[in-house]
Length: 401
Image 1 (cartoon, rainbow, N blue to C red):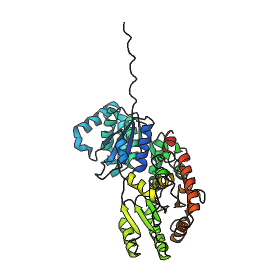
Image 2 (cartoon, rainbow, N blue to C red; image 1 turned 180 degrees about the vertical axis):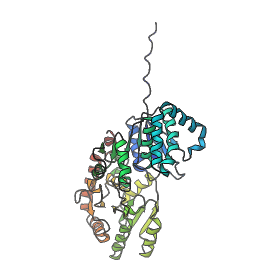
Image 3 (cartoon, helix red, strand yellow; image 1 turned 120 degrees about the vertical axis):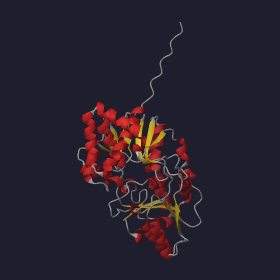
Image 4 (spheres, rainbow, N blue to C red; image 1 turned 135 degrees about the vertical axis):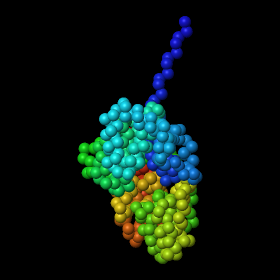
């Protein structure tokens, strides 16, 4: 009698990622996290609260295998399915369901908007066999994840980014930190801030990773004829890009033949362009707009110095450890950055880069000039920067956690 072939193991239940928007040009860190988890064999299902904008996307998005589901903003348009899900949960767990409804209503209009989305999402997560939900933000994704836990008991974790932490109401953030199975944040500075808000919460520092093979020094080409400065990120107040523009004005005034490219989009773009025009720098400083990952790599390949002029904005918004800074160091671009939040955990002054105080154009200009004027120092710092990223910020090594 022929042997009965062994029954194949059941497919692994997927981990769900709940995100603000995916894919998105600005979400390079999230893209790297998704690709890294998939390289490690983790089955994923991505739920995005905003449909992706029809813009050019990073070519690496094509490698994402996870199914992407858009959570409708107005799920009551799917009334029969949402109502059935509501009634099933009410019948199965009336007390739990009532507590979830009360918790949503206690949060006011935001909670009222979240409740139908949570009901819709609870139905989809159950149908998709999800066993754990990870919210990639301590803001709206974490609110929904905490509400889903009340509805269905689905365990969740969250990633708390610096911009979430320092612009959230402490009581609201504490509620989510204590409800989560664990919280990840990408710097020791932010972990300390979270534990001050919620002592005893399970908060872990996991450095954001970078694909050290994709961002590799071997891709560096011949330097530009004139020194080229580069800065990549959202055009937000926390990035301190007006300080960079003013530093460029000082360098230009002293005869330095520099070109500066600022890559990204955001609400600071009109103000920055007005400053560039007022300082008569339109021939030296360029706002390129958003670029794909591949176009950013091409900019790193010919950059002389990467500049991260971050600050703490008036509303408390700040960077953690910026992805653009990590990518530049991975490609062995000499860097100048500011002493803000988690940046000094990556950039060590005169070891793998230069650090300046935020909002100081003169100090920033002097640091840039030093790296341009002393290529041997710049190369030594750049090599040490690549080593720091490859050993402490490699994507796959960090994602093993």
